Image (tube, rainbow, N blue to C red; front, side, top):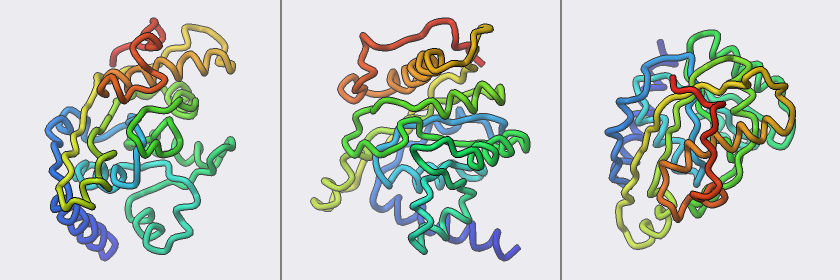
Length: 225
């Protein structure tokens, strides 16, 4: 009971602070399911999106994969604890993190993941990693693209005492199919490109980076949910 009170108190306070700093358009959030099992994939720009996504997703309980370095900071460790974060070692095959993620799906939960793996800071989409593909295929869960824009201007706006216009964009859900093919490195890369293409089309052309129009891939491995 106390933990639940702390959770809602802290989350509510952070939401109020962020609402002062940002003008958030979360109208498309209503298109997301209230519970899982499902995987939300998002672009990764800076620190701002994590608290905004989590507070705007309420009352949904969302689990996320966050780098282990986060736990070195006492305040961030506290937030990670009450916000159901799962630590993951970047650059390695972290089986414990993947096992915890699979447990979220088994409990019909929602997991959010940034396939880029690291912040772009500029808002320009970086190459994706295959972790999201592996989780989605092995657990047969639908994927929802949850993209945000505006956060890349946060620091510039803050210096000028301006609110940042932050908007969420939600794409159509889909499943990833291997179509009987072996999930080797070549197929993982192909599927990752297809997944990232679903993220890219929700971004302005100038922010699609490697996934510009000529590099998008929507071949039959993706099936609408």
